[in-house]
Image 1: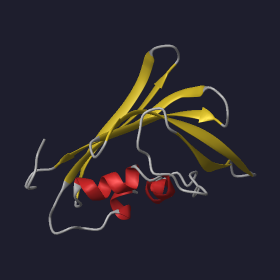
Image 2: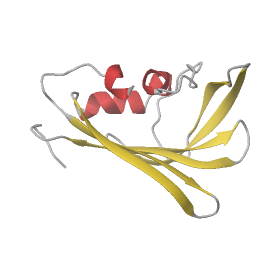
Image 3: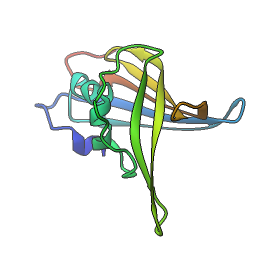
Length: 139
């Protein structure tokens, strides 16, 4: 969904490395993928660092649009997201708190998901960005 949320920008490319890490006291499970998208890093970063845009690149359909949206700027920041879960019989609506655990502006962002007002649930979403091949800037 991140790809469809981005418009092509004259051949500039960003490499997006996404990671979901789950643990039960230690890093027990980790899933990561990378993709080159036809958009500059700045465009990808503007989506990732704005909680009001997260529903645009979530392919589960679980993420809602927060009121108000929050610009994510620093470690320790918490943003709340409306969520929904559909098990085929009923739809459950709830909110999650997401704690920023890593942030390097324009380069990487990670948040640990928690229950509303509660402890972390045991997973961290992380995205690392760099300019892709053929771009004017590579890291």
